[in-house]
Image 1 (cartoon, one colour):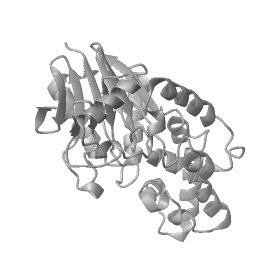
Image 2 (cartoon, one colour; image 1 turned 30 degrees about the horizontal axis):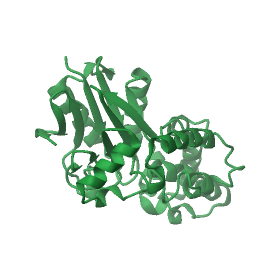
Image 3 (cartoon, helix red, strand yellow; image 1 turned 180 degrees about the vertical axis):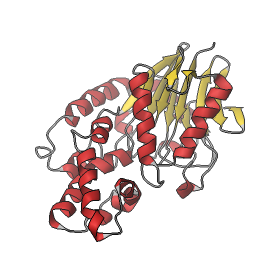
Image 4 (cartoon, helix red, strand yellow; image 1 turned 180 degrees about the horizontal axis):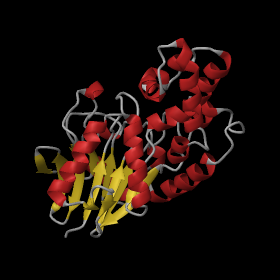
Length: 304
């Protein structure tokens, strides 16, 4: 069976979209050797571009599935940080503060104000005074470095380079700011990010400073950049991928209604799958021998 390189964009807590894609990809391409146990067949690489939580109501179910996919296919499944995962880690101190002091600071934090309340509510009832403390405590425990979700999140990748049938492809959550648009700088960035991620949070100045405000993760990083969707010149797209040392770049982060193709070089696969963004048809990008395709659950593939 043919080799496949697949990318799935922002799910934002909407598990039915993930379910529809995995089932649809199996029906169309037989991506699993064992679908029930989420074991991919040889020759299939699956990439996720981040933002698995918030907005929707089943982020925990998505995370559970992604954990299993990674555990059972360690070398062929790659999962990136999105800005929402970073915000969740960054605003963990707000939840700790509310738990310890009985405050209500988290709803006003950058995470709480950007869909984080949806994620927090998955851990328990926030509308009953008797259960709020228990919910916050469970959240803190599971999201902390030693918790199951906290451990998984902290192992996410900042970006991922891969090769497919002689072509080099870069998967990144949002895009590349101007100062990271060359191969050597990106390699250095990855190393810096990995070292920074294990720095003690208190040493880094607290969770917000570490995961949201530092230059490695802040507004002008690969997790927030929105310059690619504004590309309107083929030569610009061609120049970017050439400097980065790849043939194609795949991003998410900026929602649309379908996969956006920037001159066959850069592809935005955030199609707004969650109801908060219109619940558009779940889609994935598929690289195969015949070319590059957009796969839309229930509709089939379209050549890009």
